[in-house]
Image: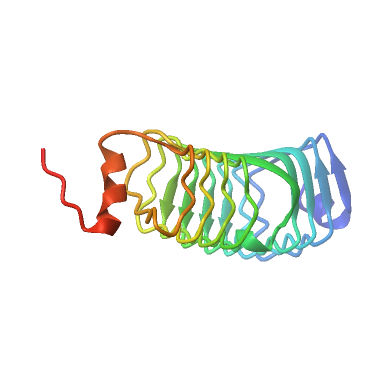
Length: 196
């Protein structure tokens, strides 16, 4: 199965399971209607790859190169991302969602990721500086040490999210939704101490 992925340029309605694609060059390939389960893409090159109507379940994307990658109707479930530069993907018509994923030291800076759904995911030191995350969802996410400076979070949903540090002075928060008591963390930037 690994050889068919490496040899062919287009793949439609296929299932791939437990493939070790670490350090492989998959540049320019197209996947439509495919399902990947427990595949390892660590240090792989997915440069200019086109993904549509594709699902990834339990896959590893440690230091994966996604430069120019196009994602349309792509779902990631229980996947791991370490050191991925999401700001380099092709954001034209991007449509994706993340469920119960783990992000460590990932960079979303300056990207246009409106309406992205991050559900019940863990973000450790993710960089969202100057990113457009309007109407995105961070419901039940853990956002420890993640940086949102200058981000557009208008209409974003942080319901049941925790461990975020967002400075309202440098971040657009119009119509953003937060849960109590975590929302009190927005006062940290002003030196306000809440007791209760």
